[in-house]
Length: 68
Image (cartoon, rainbow, N blue to C red; front, top):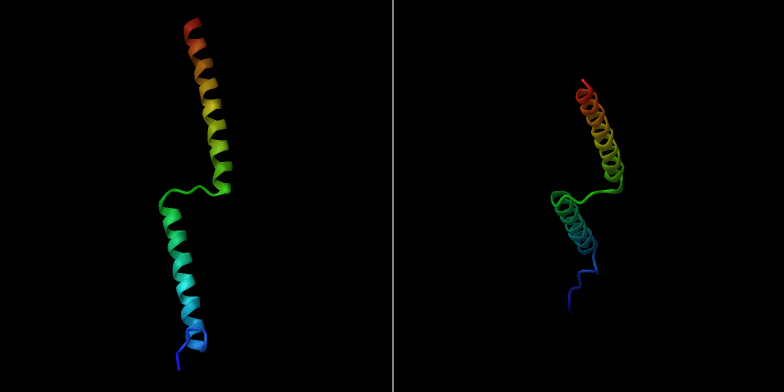
């Protein structure tokens, strides 16, 4: 008689635990590697827009200083 991992409730719980450990490891590794979620892209777009606004402001100040 062979014992199967799928034949008991303990085997089922063990499989669920192993799956949760693997999924948790993948999530931790992705977070450490700097994986950007789609929500972060919106933040980057806002930062790029702010940088463009700052560049325009600096150019305006530079032009006014040259006039003086």
